[in-house]
Image (cartoon, rainbow, N blue to C red; front, side, top):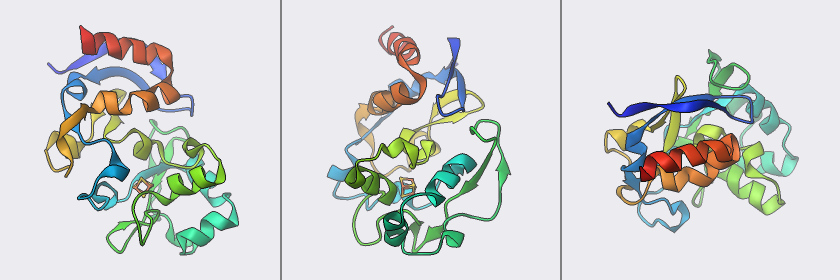
Length: 193
Ligand code: SF4
């Protein structure tokens, strides 16, 4: 049994999700991690877009005009129209980013990486405010309160999977940001136990 319960519930400070268990495979599955230092992936992990909480959508729509100019397409084309109910997201609902020219609408079109992340760093903003939590935690994700590796890692289709730090160690600092020290302490103990 690879899924084990956590000793307590850990709520994300954004308002969701709440983690109650972990799939131990996050401690052994590995990936390259240094995304911007990779010369072969061509941002393949961004090719399907990503689920975005509706509160995050509103923050993106309220972002400075300079950000909107960089995206280069109207706001009406940023997200799919289908709003999905999902209690794990802070607003209880999410949409998905549109795919344009084979990648998420927020991928830098003539370069590498995430435009939301790059813009935030350039502007001196905390990228967590604008970048979807699913993107920040990748290649970890959450399913029904369980912290798990993303499907692409589990099925081996993530182009950079196999070598490097574990999925947990790669995302450990981001887990601490969203869920706090107590979760990381619990996970460290499971990793080292
Ligand atoms: S939001 Fe950024 S990191 Fe997430 S899929 Fe889109 S381009 Fe990639």
